[in-house]
Image 1 (cartoon, helix red, strand yellow):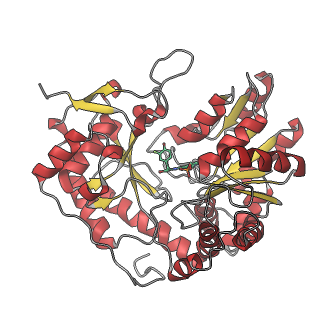
Image 2 (tube, rainbow, N blue to C red):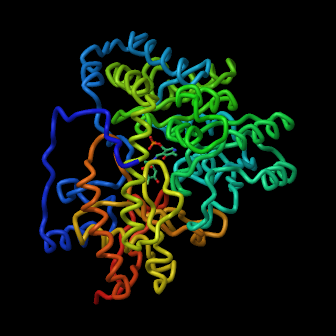
Length: 457
Ligand code: P61
């Protein structure tokens, strides 16, 4: 793994701000200790997310110039549609402004009050749309996924017994919600074998399987790397195999597809697709643009082609792995195996003395920012939100900070500096206390909640 290098060179660069510790302290206090509320000008290395933050290629920038901004029937839409069909294999493609636009339409179409939607761990926006449509998400991911130290190579796998049980006990299951890779579990893949088994169970009950395809290309690369029989198959072929086991997908093109904005809903069923096109005009825009400009659709088409290149995706995953291995070498507890898009710090172990109600991962993200101006994201009790029935905090087993690597943006030196600064934060862990929440919004609270350090007056 030592002699790999990125399959691109840099044509344009962007200046990054350098700040002093005093400036960072003031910025973090002003942001209520929430990294989502920092301004990007206050951030040196921005590892908040890999969503919409990747660097586009020269071919993608050129594609923007052939944007056809016709309100209806833009030629870019047809190119986009053809490309999604070619690489993902679904018959019908409805563009949306981003992933949650597709989740909204899908949930509204398929879910009725009282429905149960089983899936391999929740994702924040996906679950919220399922709940807003009257459904309840039930986690059926394998137990290993909840243990950061477990070495299972496919921690995104569904526990088939749990799945069967949930289906048997539910009044109605509109579809199974399967993600590859699983973001909240640490960017962990699902295996083809498990997906086959899930498909069989779904078919035996007449239930659809819907894929969250945001990082399905990364998942395909893990299958190529780890699953028997796939070493000689291309990532593009494996991606088609994954999609062929499902009836449709919601997609945030801001991840795998290397663009700054966009998404789609894909479905094989023509009647459902017609209904989705109709809802698209209600919430997103005409079904040939779905809230996007023609140029965006063209950039997605090029991005999809680039995303399935074996060298691209392999080096992307290896860059993330290199960051994780640096942290491991420094003794920092992380989720293992190292995931596809991010390294997840185990805040529960790092701040073992801070109770979960004092938001250890939120605090850790704040401390990392104070240390070096690196922005990361809480993925623990704050992200999990409250149970809509009881109003209590949901208490996830995983209390994590996500260090997310945008595609084609940072060099190994940037990431080495991040690893060093995180190791320093880890070293002074015992002197750190938790936070209290002082403002909590109703939906997706982690985006806008505000906190105060407990040691402050
Ligand atoms: C992210 F803190 N992810 O990872 P949209 N499915 C999956 C995603 O990862 C995803 C969406 C659907 C983001 C952005 C984000 O709690 C958060 O295009 C597996 O963002 O609408 C998005 O796609 C939704 C960050 C979203 C969050 C929700 O950084």
